[in-house]
Length: 347
Ligand code: PHE
Image (cartoon, rainbow, N blue to C red):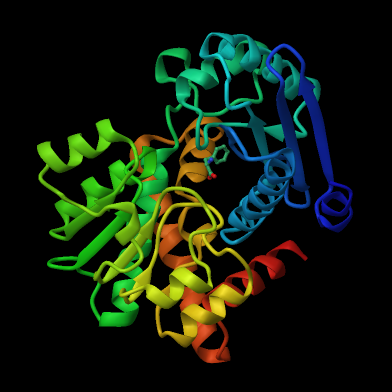
């Protein structure tokens, strides 16, 4: 714990142990350089507290870069609510209200919204005590709804830009795309891809979701143990982070990696390995900003849904093209190029 805290390059971390549920709450403020920190609340179990802290640190930093690339006036933050494995779902609403009260106490240092393990319905509950610092409530409660569809649109645009760069055309007709995780982002991404004429494969761990996509939509299901060896044009990680490491990269049979998950690279060296294998990587935080843009635009700038979609597609297209150009002209990885652009905007 101590070394994690010492080595983190962020600004502040708020720690709360929730005694009634034995959950740990971490709110990491990575940077408020461009504006107040914003980022979703991730709620899940972790093998240990250190991993939860490490996750929130990396996720918060990812938000800083995500906002810096298009130059949005927001800083990077994230919250993790690490629940014990035997967590009683009945205690969830009360925990969310206590968490909302904590967000409220920060008086706008940190704005939250949905992320892995939390929904718009959860945001409604968090907002009972945490308003006005909560994005992504249900439309009935006055919010903009979930962030997944907006994120999916940005990822879809990113995939088109990557195809244009590598194959000379943005069209997805007949392209094979493997979507890892058919959750909030993955399910909408699959819709976009199918409408564009792509051949969609998916992998997923939830049985009900597998049945829905395999049996009802007749999509090809790829079991977890075959995800990294499946042949495809585009691999789109839309589940959890850390999926690209030395081991998985060596197995990949795709030309492009472009997905919605945060922190897809296990470590900095992995961007080099992808480049060495001539796999074009669309950096996660460059193309998964769509959820943030949508929520912030709809809820703070009075945008219409149509405007939000235009802004997402336009800003992902512009940013990713710039990243690919810089990477090619400097002979660096796309990850290094993205980092350079973000850091320029931060300085
Ligand atoms: N959790 C999503 C993300 O990582 C959406 C989100 C963005 C939620 C900004 C709140 C604030 O981008």
